[in-house]
Amino acid sequence: MATVEGPLKTEPRKLEQLVFRAVDEVGATLNAALVVMGDKLGLYRALAGAGGLTPVELARRTAVSERYVREWLNAQAAGGYVEYDPIGGAYRLPPEQTVALTDESSPAFLPGFFQIALGAVIDSPRITEAARSGEGVGWHEHNHDVFDGCERFFRPGYNASLIAAWLPALDGVVEKLRDGAKVADIGCGHGSSTILMAQAFASCTFVGSDYHEGSIETARRRAQDAGVSDRVRFETVAASSVAASSDHGDGYDLVTMFDCLHDMGDPVGAARQVHRMLAPEGTWMIVEPMAGDRVEDNLNPVGRAFYGFSTFLCTPASLSQDVGLALGAQAGEARIGDVVAGGGFTRFRRAAETPFNLVFEARP
Ligand SMILES: C[S@@+](CC[C@H](N)C(=O)[O-])C[C@H]1O[C@@H](n2cnc3c(N)ncnc32)[C@H](O)[C@@H]1O
Image 1 (cartoon, rainbow, N blue to C red):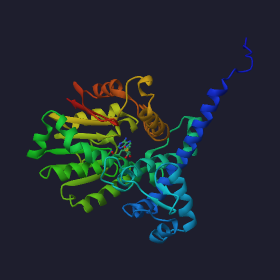
Image 2: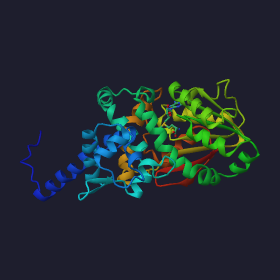
Image 3: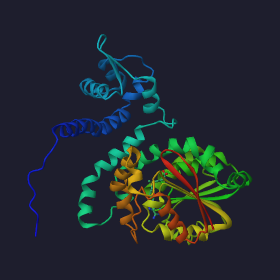
Image 4: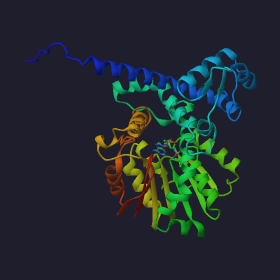
């Protein structure tokens, strides 16, 4: 028999706190689009190092309509992204905001983070529909802000950690790379990790692969621009068939996967492919989002952002593919370890971590 509950008893103070918190979050939701707007229109770059600028001056420097610039500046000032001087009516970008909003090489660079978040939100009606039916939405089906934002979000972290900390944390890998090794970077997207490794280790050969043709085309252009295309090839191939691909072959000293294993429909199948590709003493480096094994370990700001990305991007991506294991972006070490073991690997350990990433080493 259904229980009939009486009227809900609420504490007015708690309800008020919730509503005021929501005001802040609605402002933050809109701010994702405002940051991307400022980045695309060059507003932050024009403010950087300019001292104080009035809306008229900023509009003139960026060739953007003054009325839009003024409203955008006020939204940014209310959010603490720019500072407003009521005496002179000028707005300035403080030094920390200048680095975080304009320096693409800084690990603190933010516009890529907002761009992938906004891209995910733009596609949310599609995900809402998919959630009704349970079907997936492939990575390739998203809008360009997802692909470009992904590259611009991850690259600063790879710049800061990949060569200096993550590769040295793997057993004997840097020595092999210095001597000249064969490296495959699977699920490489726009290829920033592949190109970074190629720039650091000139005697190695690299093959980057991704199932998304559009990303591979961009990766090839990036390799040309970086002057490493003689040592880096990019191929469109899914992780599930990479070992069988005539472009790949076997005998790899190092196989890498950056933030993509959990996006795959069949990560165990992908692990088996890596096992076949590796030389007997080869290494598989798996970079995954920072996560604990239990839900309660991830109920924090980083987990909140990653569960959000996982709902809109990672989980639907995996569900769109064969098997559809849908590990999610907060899979955690234990579940990744199970996937690795399922692929035939006998050794697995956490080699490094940052506040945003877990770095695992797997050996045959
Ligand atoms: C979050 S992005 C990361 C891209 C890149 N590794 C980086 O760090 O910038 C995930 C990538 O995994 C790729 N991907 C998803 N499923 C795949 C599969 N089954 N085989 C190969 N690539 C896959 C997507 O196309 C996408 O480029």
